[in-house]
Image 1 (cartoon, rainbow, N blue to C red):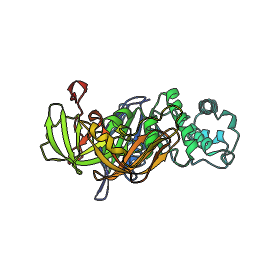
Image 2 (image 1 turned 180 degrees about the vertical axis):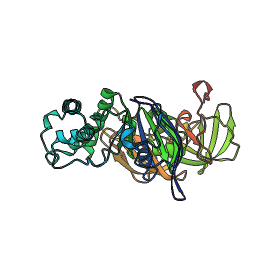
Image 3 (image 1 turned 60 degrees about the vertical axis):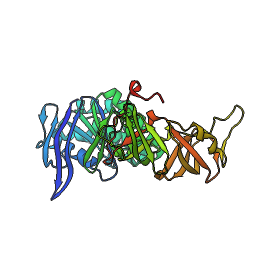
Image 4 (image 1 turned 90 degrees about the horizontal axis):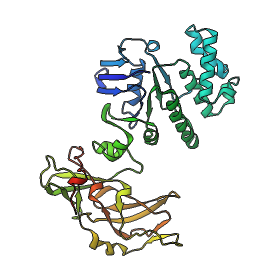
Length: 396
């Protein structure tokens, strides 16, 4: 096991900068996930750590060693790729033992390492089989087992579940969590799937265009995103964004006038904002509230939203605001449902979590509300304003 650090790490191809001065500190035994959209540089960064890509600038430190110029085989790392890359003519045992044989290990060492890895991965009963006789999940376990036998200081995983179906991905996520808990080895995992990131990571590194946007725990990134990019990327369904201008600023927060003329309060520090500044409000789907939609009474399975129902909510639109919208469709997922709506305040529309089996008539006008403590505010540059704690919030 080892601590891993990058100091101003950069990568350039010709005149094009790909990775821009990244500083990371990954502690011994942490499970860290690199996440971001396609082309953000997460796999390139992982390959630089592995030694498969040259480092243009900065330092890479594993343990106490600067490893910029050390060959991959001597860095104390093991990498698992998206492709299983198994030798089809070899048994599982031989696939897992091959690297140790090349390293000149004794038969006794090899046998113990392979059987220990197979036991950890629950494939010890499959060691005589060939890769073609295995399922996708079993093949991926063999690839992981091949890495485990090397007893590395750091494990690197490059989108290892991308080739698996949805059900198997869920099972393998649980396997990765169990594996980390058992081995307690430093692991760095690359994915574009934020569900994998949120469920596996001790710490998430969000990347965009070769830069680190934010580093933090899954809880921190979800509830306290540093900027609009992170807020929009982390969370499924995504955060809702509404445009407006600052109307007032006081010690307890700010008031924003939305494009429609509606007013919304937010419990954030005004910082350098001035009256009239353009801002963007962010609200998670679970934090938008439809006052006219009450939970279904006992014995009644459906909640309905009918045209005109929104008007009864207008009197309650105090500090929580009154966001106007028109319903479009409800997406039911069984245990939860999401209402999609159009709004003059949200260019990309709004998503609201509603009770299961909610029914809605298309184009139904409605009034949505959000509690000020759940409203994020981003300035014109996309930076999040500091949210106030309970003692600083308005009594409104």
